[in-house]
Amino acid sequence: MKNLIKVERARHRLTQGDLAEKVGVSRQTIYAIENNKFNPSVTLAIKMARYFKVTVEYLFDIEE
Image (cartoon, rainbow, N blue to C red):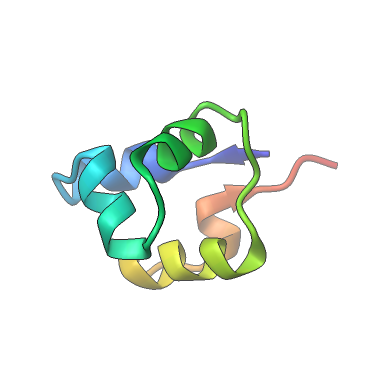
C-alpha cells in the first residue's frame, strides 16, 4: 500500500518522532509505514488522516 505520510510530515515540518508522539505510536512504526514495511491498523490510519486534516483515501493508496 503506497502512502503519502512522508510528504505530509514534510509539509507539516514534523519528524517521525513528532508524528509518532501525536498519534500514539513509536517512531519505528512511522518509519515502517513510510517504507511500506507495515500497514497501519484502521484506527491508526484514521488518526493520521485526522491529524493531517486529509482523507484516509488521500493518505493511503490501496493497490488493487
